[in-house]
Amino acid sequence: MNRINYIIAVGCMLILVGCDSFLDRSPISNANENIFYKSEDDFLVATDAAYNSLYTLYGPESLPSFFGELMSDNAYSDNNIGNVKDYEAFDTHVGMDPSNSLVLGFWNSYYEAIYIINNILSKSNSVDFDLKLSLQAEVRFLRALYYFDMVRAWGDVPLVVKPLSVAEALQQPRTPQEQVYEAIIEDLQFAAKNLPDKKNERFVGAANEDAANTLLGKVYLTIGDKGKAEESLLKVYGKFSLVPYGDLWDTAKKNGVESIFEIQYMGGKSNPYSKYWAMFSPLENKVITAWGAGINQASNDLWNAYEAGDIRRDISIQNGYVSSNGEFIDVKYCVKWKDEDAELDNRREAADNNFIILRYADVLLMLTEATGNPQYLNEVRDRVNLPHYGEAGYPSQFNTVDLACEHERQVEFAMEFHRWFDLIRTGRAITVLKNSFKNITLDAEQLLLPIPLDVISQNPTVIVQNEAYK
Image 1 (cartoon, rainbow, N blue to C red):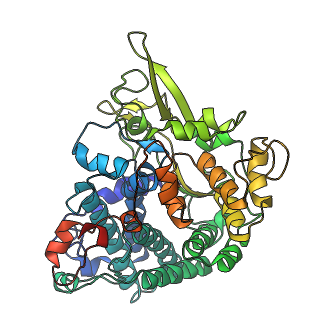
Image 2 (cartoon, rainbow, N blue to C red):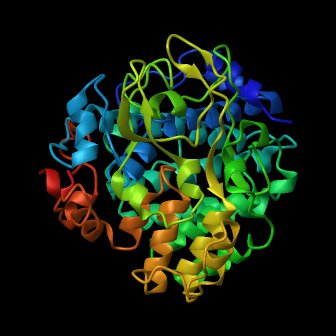
Image 3 (tube, one colour):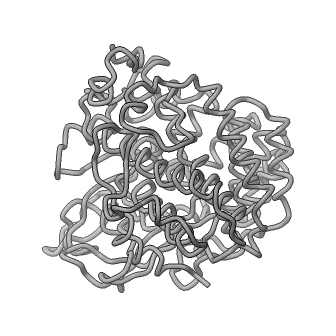
C-alpha cells in the first residue's frame, strides 16, 4: 500500500533543527535516542522520516528546482517574496555569492536528511530484524540520490557516512568529487543488490532495484563512463512502458507503468500535499490559482523548442491567461502539476500531484546518450507520433545524436528539474546559456554553487571556497 501516512506521523517523531554544525543535525524530540532504535517498528519510523526529506529536497523551492531548472534556458523567476536577490541569483547568474540564504538552506537540508540516514545505518548494524537489509538499502538509495545532487551542485563536499559529533563535524573537510562518486556508486550497488524490483517494492513509492540501477546509469554518465552506464540502464530496459504523455500528470493515474521512483503526495490541507501548482503558477494571478508565486516560469526558448505537432508542449506549458479584468497576460507557465480541484490552504492549493524523479523515458534517452544509438530516442518520439531521428521531417538543426538527445530531453522533461544538470553533464551549459534569451557568459568555475559563508565560518581552516567565489 501507499505509505502516505508515514509522512504525517514522522513530523512529530523526528523534527530537525539547526545545530552547532551543518553536519550535526539531531532529532530533538527523542531525548533517549540510544534506546529508541530497538525494534523493527522503530527503524520503520526512522526510515519514514528519511523518505519525508524528499518533500523538502525536491519541492518547488529546492536545489533541484532552482539549480536543475531555473539556472537554465528553460525558466526565469518572476517571484517577489522573500529575499528576491537570492532567487534572482539562480535565474540570472548575477550576484551569486556565499551569503546566498537559499544556498545555505539547501546545504543544511541535505545534511539534515543525511544525518537521519546515517543514524539508521549506524544503529541498525547492532540490531537484528527481518527488514534490516531492505531498509538499509532504501536509505542508502536516498543517500546516494542526495549526495549526487550535492556533488553536481557544489563539487567537493564533506562526505559523511556515519553520525558525527559537533567536534568531529567541525574538522570535516570537503571530500574530492571522485571519492564522493565512489561512495554514491557503492550505495547504489548495495541498493540494487538488496532491493526488490519496482513491481515488488515494499510500498508504493519506495526505493527499488530499478530506481537504483536507473540512478546508477545517470551517475556513470555524469562521470563519463558510458559503458557502465549502458550496462546499468539495460537492466531496466524493457521492464517499463511509456504511457500517454498526459497520463503522467493525471492525479488519477499516479505511479503508472512508466514511473520508476515517484514522490508520494496526498491532496488536502490536512495532508502532505504538493505545492508545485501554486508555486509555479504566474505571480499573483488570482485567476488560475488563488495566488501564484511566479517561480520557474517557462521561457520563450523552451516554448519554441517544441516541434510543430508535438503534443507535449500544450500538455506541459500554458501560453498565457486572461486576468480578472479581461486582459490577456502573456506569460508562459508550467501546467504539468495542475490541480484545479485542490483545496485551499491559506491561498495555496493543497494539490494532489506526485512528483516523478525517475521515469522510463529517462532510461531510454540516457541509453541513447550512452550508446549513440537513436533507437531508444525514437521510442520516446513514437509516443508523441513525431518523425524518427534520421527520417524525413526530423528537425535538421539537430544533426548529431548528441544534439538530438539534448533536444529530446529538453522537451520531454520540461520543468522537471533536469535541464541544467543535463547541460553540465554533456559540457553544453556555457554555450547553450550564452545563446539563450538570458545571453549570459559563464566560465567553468561558475557552474558550481558557492560553499555557504556560514559553513566557511564554522570551518575557516578546513573548508575551502569554490574558485569562482574566493
